View 1: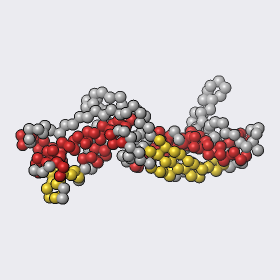
View 2: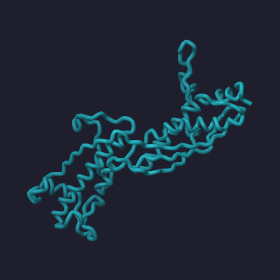
View 3: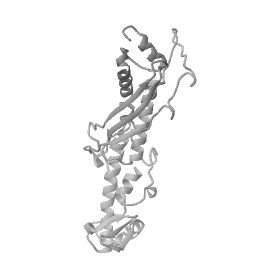
Length: 275
């Protein structure tokens, strides 16, 4: 959120204080959930920053005696296009708006307080495509992922590093769910996988380097943002399952479910119909 506001206002993200979940400041709101942060909150941040930008340009235009269209926001201030010497910092603009409102024209409201409500469309669709290649040891049942590629579309990326981090985390979650993680119970319903010695989690040793392909199709939202959280977790399980099934198909093995640990892979190879 701070990065969105900073991009619009031409300042460093570190100069933006983002307060979330403080009922003394924002007494109502449903909180985050699913992939709504970028769609709703980032959209609101985009709109409110644009409105603040317009207000700052009006104040600066009056102080610098130029049209607002001749001004640009950059490096924490406003300057006249083509004249870097004619410049005011955001702090100077705030000082004028709050401490010297009498110097402003009557049509410019004092202060720099902006409030915006953003309502997202009923449905915002993100998407991703996963492809992976696996190698299966038919003697041990061990599955090794050789290559993993994800092409996703979350609209304009606010922060590509965050997008790729969420994709990688979702892919790791999916790989773990297919190849490693399995809750086992006895016939009386007692859990047998009660420690991480039995319930295996993916580590850096099991997760390949993910290759990314970014497709940008803006949504009908402020900023065009879509969700990205599910882009890694939803596509990865079927991609891995189908890759294993494809690798074992020439041997006549039929994959019908998960998990696909070594025991399950060997069982699939020895079931009737497998060669």
